[in-house]
Length: 58
Image (cartoon, rainbow, N blue to C red):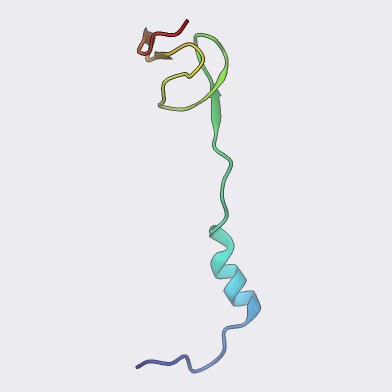
């Protein structure tokens, strides 16, 4: 069974984990109602996607 020959330093360990953070999702304004929404998803406010109404909202 392989065993590491030397101990990994805190710096090397933390540099390896530097990409493991969570990113804030990018919000884009809806072209219809200008409310923030996730890209490539139906607007939860007006129900529009791609210039047409996908979900009927009140």
